[in-house]
Every structure is written in C-alpha cells, then in structure tokens.
Image (cartoon, rainbow, N blue to C red):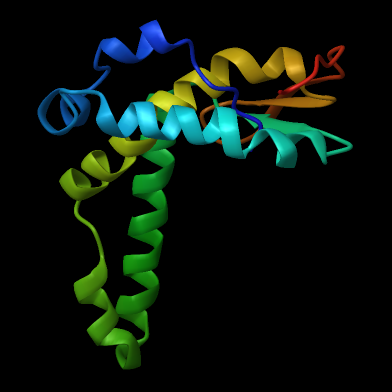
Length: 141
C-alpha cells in the first residue's frame, strides 16, 4: 500500500525472467501501473499515517517467503490431518516465479516509499529493526 505509479518509460524494460517471457508487450505491467495511478489514489489519500517495514532488498524478500513456505511445510508435516494440504505447498522454483510478479512494485516501493512515510522501520536480514525514523512525508498520490 502506498506504492506510487512508475513513469511509463520505466515499464519498457523487463526486470526479470517473468516479464521478459510473459509480458514482453508490457500489457500486464502497464495495466498494474494504470490501476495504481487511477484506482489507488483515493485510498492513499484516505490514509492518515503511513508506516513502512523496509526489507533490506528484494532478494531478502524471496528468502523470507521461502522460509514462510518451509515453516508451513513443517507445520503440516507435524499435523497428519493436514496431509492433503501438503500438496499445495510451493517449491523454491515456484516461489521464485511467484514473487517475480511482485518484484517491480517491491523494488519501486523500497526505493520510493522511505521518504514518503511517517514512520520508517529498517529491517535487517533477520527481520530485526536496525533503525527507526520519522521522515518528513510527502503526499503519496
């Protein structure tokens, strides 16, 4: 929430394999960008306070998502009544593809949002808060 639309010219260049292979015409990323610009502005304006937990990088986001899936696998394995749910778990490769859908917005958010929030909490690789600040927020619309 809060991610601003990107300049149209930045959408032309794919940032990962998914965009290269499955959105070479920029249809999807242009649609998402248009939705942010046209549909999310009102929601952004309704927010009184903006808080950001800032991951160190997109690579770290991938690692965290993989850890989440591994913890779910462990939980389901321990509870034999959830055995059918184990078939719904994602492999590391599936997670890598899945998060590529969010890479563009995540990297844009990591770059743009810190100066636009009321409270910024910077996280390290282990999700510990390593810094907290109150930047002078600018309007998120």
